[in-house]
Structures are given as C-alpha cells and as structure tokens.
Amino acid sequence: MEKLLEIIKETRNIALNRADAGNIKVKGPADFVTMTDMGIQEFLKPRLAWLYPDIQFMSEEKDNSEIDMSGKVWILDPIDGTTNLIHDYRMSAVSLGLAQGGDVVLGIVYNPFTDEMFYAEKGCGAYLNGRRIHVSEAECLGDSLISVGTSPYHKELADDNFELIKRFFKASEDIRRCGSAALDLCYAACGRIDGYFEMNLKPWDYAAGTAILREAGGKVTCPDGTAPVFSCPSDIVASNGMIHGDMLDLINKTLTLK
Image (cartoon, rainbow, N blue to C red):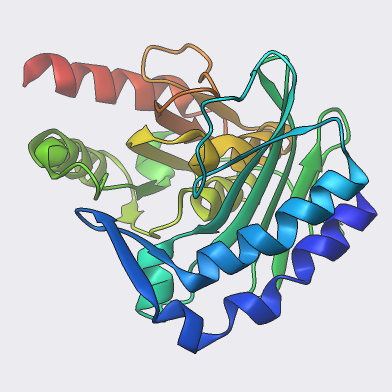
C-alpha cells in the first residue's frame, strides 16, 4: 500500500497544471476529458504494470472491452470531477480501486488540491493521511447531511433526480453537491456527510470510494439494496449504515410515485 500511495501522490504536479486542465475535449453533454486526465492515466498505467504485471487495467479514458472482471482489475478514474477541474473548483480526485473476483478490495482517493489521501484495504480499516477514519453516528435522516449527485451526463434524468433531491432536502438537515462521487464517498467515510446518492455512475466513479466507505463502517448499495456490480454503471446509495434503510425507502417511494 505504501508504494501505491507514493505513486498516487506523485500525480499532484500533473493535477495542479492549469494549462493542461484548460486543454479540453468534449466527449458528450457535460462530459469532458482534459490533458490532465490523460497525463495522469499515462503516468499511472506503466507504473502499476511494473509493480503488478498480473493485474488488468480499467480506466475511464480507455477501451475496456478486453477486461475480465473475474480476475484482478485496477479501476482508475484519473480525475473524478473533471468539470470541477476545468473551472478550478478544487474538488477533484484521483481515484484508484482494485477489484478482485467482482468485489472491490482496495481503494485510494487523492484530492491534490487539499493534499488529502483517503485509502483502505479490505479488512484493514480506512484512513485519511494516516489517521483512522469512521462514519458518522447520525441515526435518522432528520439529523443527516446528505450529498446529492445530478447525473450531469444524463440530463434526461433531471426530473427524477431533482424530485429526489427535493425530497431529501425536506427530510434531512440539509443537502450538499460536491461534483465528485469519489470524494462524496470518502466524505461519508470520515463523517463529513452522512449519506450520498447518485444515479448512473460508472465503476471508476465509485469503486475506490466504495472500498473506503465500507472499511470505515458504512454501506454502499444500489437502490434495491443489492451490491453494485463493478463491471457496469450502477445507481449508488451510500451512507453511514444507520440511515441506509431510510434512504432506500425514500428513493424507492419517490420513484414509485413518479
């Protein structure tokens, strides 16, 4: 783990290069890739291959059709929160997860702007910059701060998303919008928020954060309560565990009533 953390931290200079962040290619509606994304991927891929030649490599910015998810797979998002990066919003992260046999067993999420490194390995606890972290103790939605996602690549989901957001706003203490799924999951892991949900996330958005939140005592599922499948997009509900049932109930009641 220590070597991995060192390599991930070395991406900081790439992430902080504003010239590369301004070199933008549009992939789709509100979906961008920058030279920063590509630079971090090109930096990490050979180093991971040298350290772990037997582990496959999945990344947002490459063709992943050859990946066998029954084996070991790195799942990388070189920059989670690319739109934030473009606007210098400073809420973006390098997110690296390790999936094995369809489960995620290791996660590292690094925000180069705050120099915060979240990480976890299955069975070993979750950490932030070397300090053990744990989820909050909120027991009900009314006492909870909930982070929400807007699925910006899928504006056709706006009516459902914003109805959910409105209902969570009314049921909770307040809501937040971060713009990085990886950081939202880590913020739930260290107790800064109590829950988070977003529809249609890709595996590289949530893989690493899922490992970290689980090791911090939290829970990550799909809205039907099943575990997410790391080979395909999933709707994600994450929490400290104690409010998880209430979150699922609110989501499913809202979508049933639409």
